Length: 208
Length: 208
Image 1 (cartoon, chains in turn yellow, orange):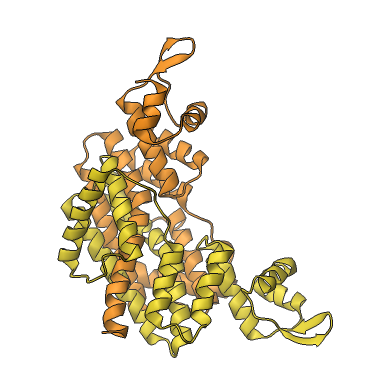
Image 2 (cartoon, chains in turn cyan, blue):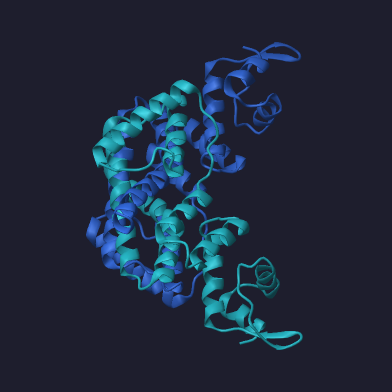
């Protein structure tokens, strides 16, 4: 198909497609004349993926390029694709005071002893969790142990669902794409579902 | 304390504090002279909250003002504070094609029959979940029923933790603040914890 048809099918404007081609978010089409190229379903599929990561996940274009490069590189194993995705999409929540960080570490110990998670001390996701917990302590809004355990169970069950999805995919590239979509769009979905559950539970508690 | 001390204690620059005062994100201090005002711990507390919502939650300043107005208004019940917060922070993930939206509704039926959630059809969080699921269908990355059930359980357990935290707070305003912090910072925390759990589980599966 021509670029105009690719634009119609994907809902992405031609100018944006050309920008993605320049930025290596999209592979070149087959050149049919000095000014024209032919595109196929692989382009359509990739464009939809880029659009979803940008629009639903709110990822900057440079981040999308980096994580897609990891997905496309057969030399990068699945665990590392997940790792790079996580590093790329974790927001740095800024510094908190020392005492709050100490309290956050106590919370993390509660969580990991409850769940049995085994992760490297320097894992970026762990640093992200520590920073958010430290902020909660600074605000006088630290979660109690019952809430910590509930959130840890929730994260563990969510990850179980994530890995079920990845295991169903066939081949490294499909699995990597599933992991990427599951992580980025999954964050948005889980946040929405948590709110649906909050609403259902809070309506029962406060109005029912 | 003076504005300079408020700035030091909160880590928020004086110019930003003055901007927040103009934008009604922060209540005025007690005027001590035509050019000076005195601030207290209520200002420090509020500034930390604003900073966390902006830096950790990534909320625009106008959104922070709207949700804090709901927290501060004694006429707004807790369920509505949660509702307004959810509406304010839910990203619109854009349109998906009709068939994908139909498939997403089937997924939502699977989820609500599994969890027993009772929510209004027009709830913004439900619309958010529908849009993200539709995008996943468009990408050929729709979660299987086992993944859907895992994510639904995760959201339900997370919400259970949220409401445990809210029930522990004393008084409407504290509960509203807890709900707000738990929802916004909790999203960031749960996303991080999910990644810690993914990493622990995926290292075992793919490397262990």
